Length: 237
Image (cartoon, rainbow, N blue to C red):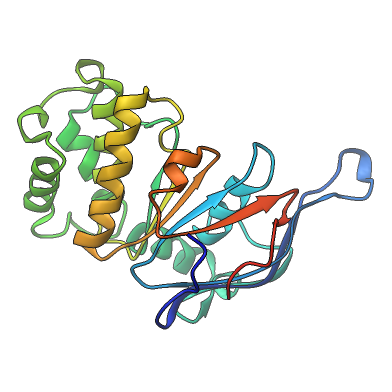
């Protein structure tokens, strides 16, 4: 699981650190410190570590939801910290898909409508072919017959599969999953992990999964471990 990254990097972390303002103006602790890593296009990577080790903060930096205090996060050679807010929003919309522990589906919308929500965020009309792609992906994850069901009519595993399809609808280069199996039972969790690995291959998307579950991490091709905001051992370059 710790083999070197192969191929040119899609994602590069260059001595990345992150700290947040401390209450009362005291010295702020470092949540992440001196992280360097290269991830090739199409890779399947697990980021492991206990709760509070900085996994979610790291995914937020890669996903453009936050900016590092030190170092650089480069995707396709671009330093995300150098993008203005409009360019960063476009990056999040078109190049990154997020899957969280909770599905965050809109309860009043059907599965199909939830999947199409990210296609409405840009300027202009919904991209041509978006609904056909949404239906194809829902079919692919076994939910074609459930496309018109609302979240309350779906099981926990089905809701999370809808969330995965929503994350893929805009054809991102990066799929970031933050404890995606944390709210699922053992069977549904295993099915979701299998699906993520298969979609990594079929869609050509680079998959990064943050998890504290060894069985989830073992399904990824490579893994790195965080401990108190640092790599537990030297991360492969």
